[in-house]
Image (cartoon, rainbow, N blue to C red; front, side, top):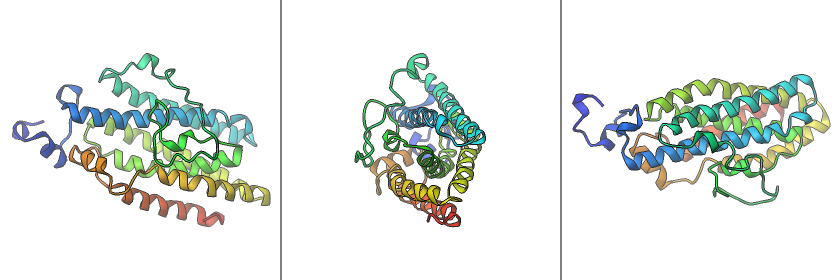
Length: 254
């Protein structure tokens, strides 16, 4: 904070676009919300990486296998980048990667809604199992489009080191989505693949939609006061819905 804002209430400073740059000047409630946001991202990326690792051997070509390997690697790398920031706040980086079963999944027909499950902070969508290559490709596309919307929001977060990391990550996450769209186009070229893709869209689309959280969220209002969020869940969901329609319509899957 500058001298001009040193006497301003912290919430006013953050609500007006102010940024914090180190753990030393972070108030306790802000710290809690920030760590929750970071943990959700890290845990979701680790769970996503573990899920995609299981699909590598189902890839139908060497090119597709390389794409799955890239996604698996880079999602783990993204988790590590944010985890390093959590380490500045005292998180145990050394044991974090092994303290939860990231590859564990619930039954396919589980109805989690928007609730967290288990002891980690992954989004509920990452508790559902991926079954086969078509399922993996569709899930990657739908969740990748959601990640694009979310990272646009998170790149403006008021904790400057985290905003920087999210801006660095965003292009690679977009590349994951682009790889998925290429794989999806290959799938729908055949009748069997098109049917499998359509079934996967029907399964994953509502589950990814739920990851945007509840509408009129009280937590959003708290995060907005701290400059950790700017647009409500319903606005992000609407953006994602439009992007899904734009991406799937040319493939006959909208």
